Length: 494
Image (tube, rainbow, N blue to C red; front, side):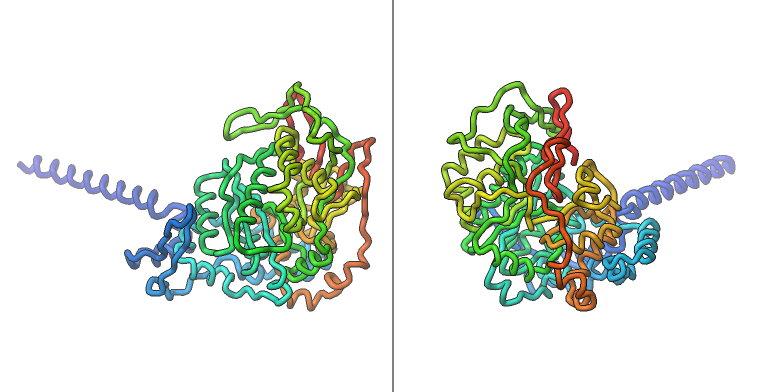
């Protein structure tokens, strides 16, 4: 009997140990993982677990969704916003960085390598936008003021994005004004969580929308061009009118304040700013190109099939994918016969956006168009490997293909450019650089550093109107327009 009791107690002890071990394992899996361990997530989790009441109701309306906030559901507990105060958190000397202080830049780079950039997930934004009023308040949108000059000159922004919700929201917040319109085109291949997060952010604003039709965006393919024109149609369908359209990528960032951007657009007086020169790389448009591969690994391949001549045998031009386009030009793109015919013809060329915009701009009858040819554009500035030492200094950040991902050491050069926007800045490569770019636009910073922002005319610049055909040096400040080809598969230096 005693032996039986001892065996029974031993078995019970073993069962207890096993149960405790399983419980500890389950706790680590479900409650101590990196997501649940995130204090921001825990804060949101606590708030939304306090009540079963909905924090926002999404109502279907004309195939879109309107977010309706309910006052009795607004949580009073303060939520620390993880982005607004980061410049102060990191104690960055942005003035010293922008002024090119070598010691400050060196110390900042050392601090950057020793810091950990927290990754804000798509799920965080999905949760944060459950109550739109709180989201707009916590992320600073409610504090954005609009000057009279901005109110009288609304702008339509077209954003082409495919990943990193945090940076997309960061860009949106820094170009946002209530009188503007914003259309975001999402790469159809982007993750479901990314698309959901952007949709939720857009639903919190009357003037922000996701394109009604998404395209697969592949480097060198037609997806970006088609996606932006889809956005143009959506923008024209809005009751609100606007003056100019500006297209951006998710890694772009403004070099000018919103008021300064408006002031420059006013000087265009209805003209478009679309760079372009006579075509010098016929291989992009001489042959038919097709997307080949699988849905997650598309590439653009050149075939042996010759292209038919363009509509009405018009002359083709080479340019860039960025523009400052008037309202009438956008109407022309969507409704004009030659514009739509040229679009259809361009879709199976290589980098069609780099032919389409430049060519349409230089046709008789194009609103805001011109016959002048130039690489010069105010829209955007970049550092390129192919133009290093000729038209821009070396990249101090990191090259991804031909394009420089900017770091803090690049900011003294970039900040002294007179363009409206700069690329390429990556929040997860050098978040200090991006935060200093944000602080640079603040009134207090600009007041203390007038010599940086006041007299742009005094800054020497290199202007190039013709490409160097001998070594295929391309448009300074923009991407390469003649990619390398091997075995009929396009390999793009991006």
